[in-house]
Length: 123
Image (cartoon, rainbow, N blue to C red):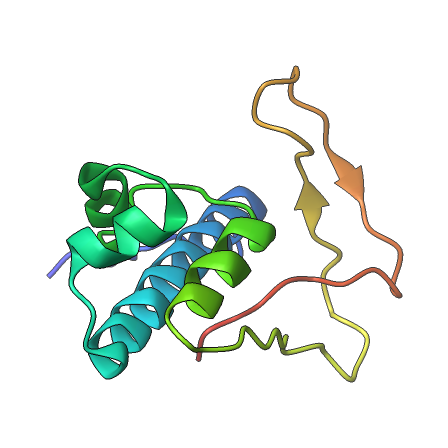
């Protein structure tokens, strides 16, 4: 067996991307659960929101990076309420993460101050 990790450990760029993708999956799961609980069809939801059925499908698959506002509106249309939460570290991290701000900008890395939110880490 190869000693190399399948997923990079301690790689700030990987950790940030993982946090983003994880949030996308979480959002799509919230929509799917609310849709099922509402008894509505995807077509009904599309009609209420004024979007195409393919857009609803894309949101359910986690293929759309929708805004928090659109996520809240989608859940509201389904009779659900969006509640946000985060796992905030209670201790100073051993290693300061490097951050890249904006994927469309030239790469910039910064060392975060100890009080800056690190992001959500799955255990």
